[in-house]
Image 1 (cartoon, rainbow, N blue to C red):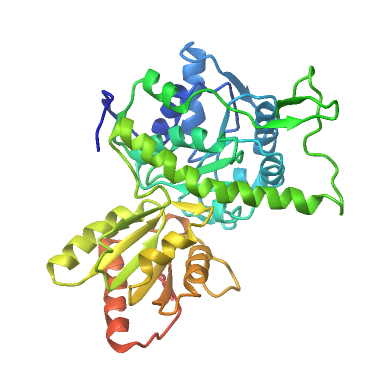
Image 2 (tube, one colour; image 1 turned 90 degrees about the horizontal axis):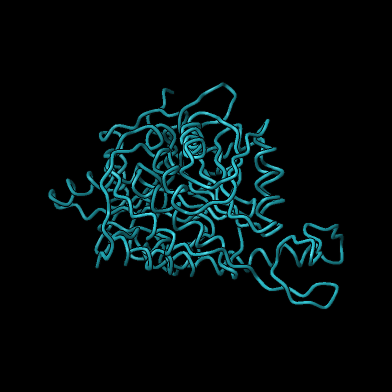
Length: 410
């Protein structure tokens, strides 16, 4: 990939990388409330504000519910808006997440993924954002601090596209990415601002018969988030689905455009496949676990095992066609979940991927591995054991258990 812009190599943890990206994106409003392991993001950004490095209105709210409410209001007036949260804070936002997506407000939010109580746990898993999978937000999950930086820059361009006009969650694994120092190559501020551009607005017809930008403006009054009962509510929700469908293409376009200025891309923006071309067994995962799995795949390949990894970068909208094309020739697939769906058959990612593959005439055998809850470490040996299970299943065609709990004391 051609890299046309000079970049600076820095050392940042994932939270700092997010804050730095937001700094470069010419954001008008940041409204947030601190919660571990997200706190560093807004703490660092508040320093930029205090030092006069950005012209951003920073709103310290009294709760995460208020942070999302303020973000929604700012976005609807036309401001480029960012917030961040995690765990119980994200759960407290739950109501306002639906209001924000239903109002078509393109807020960008970083979520430093963390377990939900009870019992209390501050470490990383995906139970917080997976609980919001049907809230109407786009979900992108990153593998490392570099991708956290890159994805925040991309997120504003995706969310603010007039055909999308939906909010985005960028998820980074709590502590594993949020607090770990890594190499991060950053673009110049000019390059980022040129790439993101100014916010664009859909044009709408008001009750006064005027065609105006879709934003709250006293000169052109309009109602957003109205009372819509049986006659209209359904149509509002269906329009959100259209925005999600449009996002599938937009995410790929932005990923490709970003590669031209940075030299970096993440698969096609939706999925990131590794050694899948001739693979017979494969693991599907999201987040930082993919990095370790790729090392194990390299080892297995040297041993003659045709193994591969598919990292699901975009979870909402679900890229079901890409999943089908990538996995249709695999014999056995394990899907890894860092969350649970108590009472269900497997967890969220497993259910989504299995559903996507269901209509294939020849589909892989599938098993689910739930792992890492509350930040529990999964060693390379633990992860290799999954591939060993898949080798056995591929030989015998027999699945002893559909759902496994990796590294659990039972």
